[in-house]
Image 1 (cartoon, rainbow, N blue to C red):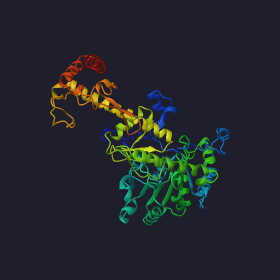
Image 2: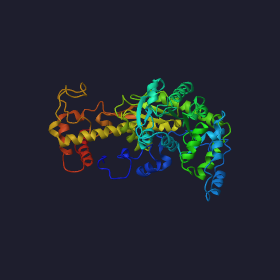
Image 3: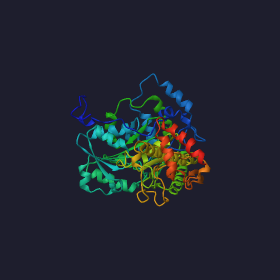
Image 4: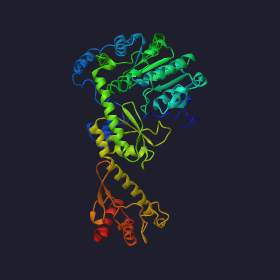
Length: 496
């Protein structure tokens, strides 16, 4: 629908806006694949791979007790000041931060929208790094702000004029999806420049506790009216069902945002769980988070080393609990790769929507060694299925236009594997993978550790008379798959 066709009473710049797509939902994938949710491995969401703190060995947290506390509060409105919850967040952070600096939010997206709602108007310029979460763009669009994209490595060398023209600068640390961690010193310098030019800097630190909390600038926000830091318990504590994030700002800024936020934006269950989590002994240095960081470093290094040894994968350096992988040298683009793995119950984040439409990047969250090996173990299956799919497309084209199948030795991309008099009707064998060694095909060791079927020594489909007989059967009326089985039985079986 174009703006001219819009008859809805909404802002003109919201026309054609579609629902945001994040990582795949487990229940939807489970229904589509007829798999139990427990059988699906989700590499698309960036949760703490060690699990939630209620499952942590030696944890003093009692989920049953929290349920009872929350149940007792269900019949009354929450105290919308959320003083105990804000105090718990301040206690978790330490460094002189108090509850008056805390803004509670129902997830990071709600906080981001609240901040932009209070600060930008239509036409205002907001600087975002490339790449960055799609929600940054969407939140700006809702309020009519114009996003200016700056390469991530250039964000900290912005000229004064660029900062002056911007109303807001938004960035995540570590960056999502690259995992690049910016030092506290660099962010502090940028925050000072923004304050000097009255430009608001929003730093999204949603997963910094899983990286290096020493690089946080949360405490600097208390004395800077132009700096707001966002923290979250969702990813850090592997609790995506508990929608709680919180902002850290100066007293004056926090007071304004708390006045503007939705009055009862945090429910009783979320409040009870969030308070317990934020009162965890040791805060960012708790044994739970320290062991989580050690696990992430160890498994991240393993994933990078393993992927780097496979053709077509180039994992980028990361300091987070996720890794951006460049597939530019791979024979499949990121979109197809993700879809192929999804049919096997393995979810991966395609980053084409946040990487300028380039279908070359995927993001993998760090998970257990066993789960990652399950992903690697499926590579051969995915490659075989992709080859069969490509073969089917070529085959259908051949059947529909047999007059276009003639090719010479010098015109085919597979030359010089050809021999004199070879038939070029089929670019891909319609029987792959036949797994019948009588054809000359055989199993070889795969780079991923499994086995893959090789047709290197099979010449059956290269011979003109055989190819002609197979094609005649395939062109008969009927289902293509049934005709393939018939051609194998009537033509190939008699030869082997």
